[in-house]
Picture 1: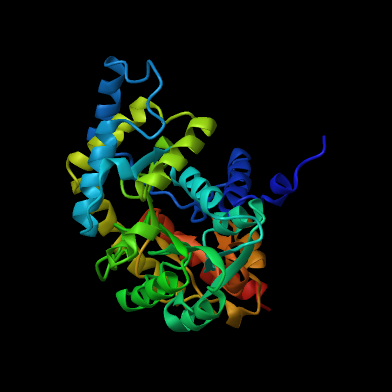
Picture 2: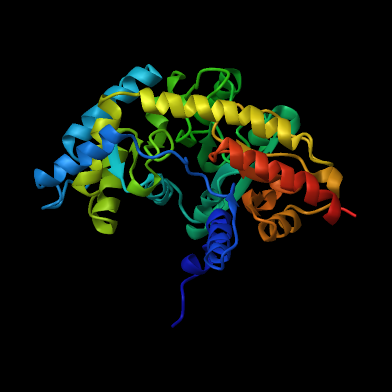
Length: 388
């Protein structure tokens, strides 16, 4: 078979590549500490699981659901978004998808013509670059520099934004944990308005801000109508395996995204949507407790990483990733990743996240304190051996 340029352009996400290798080693009897994959180690809260079970008795999985999502969930999402962002959303501005990734893809397909600029953070979530290549866009990575606390290089953005179709934001960010400040968001918003650029704001870690409140670009006047806000249930509610996310945007775009979902996945299963309604409308205590635990783990992993010879790690403002600078070790991120996997610690090289990720590694602290401490001890012991 002859494959298309589009499908040949896709690359695997590094986290899943390392996860597969780690699982293979585990099948051979090796013990692995998983710091490579971005998923909470907590169970889905019991009341959410219970709602899903009850929905089975009500035959929620008997038939297809609307491609945009069931009306009850869309209304719940719109109400929650309006309260948390302080900007009014209606249910007709919401689409439910099987995870956030389909919403990302549908938005890029809807707004980016081949050959036009697609701007995204670098280092950033690998799917941004992959989708840019898939639609044959002119992908431009906007540097997130450590000296700026991994916020956007606004001067670079100002030079590159002319002629762009779409700008992707991610705050709190994967892999850096960096947070976009309101002052920076105002500058970004003005640039987008002046240059008529749409924004995709990936806010899946919005509830995981540890030192300050999350600020969305939709709160800035003139931005709601040109922004696609993407969020989901995987991180906040420990529901990665349920596959549920959503996009909020102008109704005209939501209708187009609905056509894509109709032709692609048809719909999200009813049981998952029932669980999501419960997640939003019922107790938030399990999520808040989980997020508080992540904050404690953040301190543990950052303090530990700063004890590893040649490592320097800033305190991430959000999400659940540490992104230490390893340049003083004179070892590549891939070399450290490969070596540490064989020593029982799975982590990711920074170069998996873009050009500006070189000289860093990413570790997820969505694992137990015990495992984090064990991993740090192994790093302290092993890094000097491979830096000689």
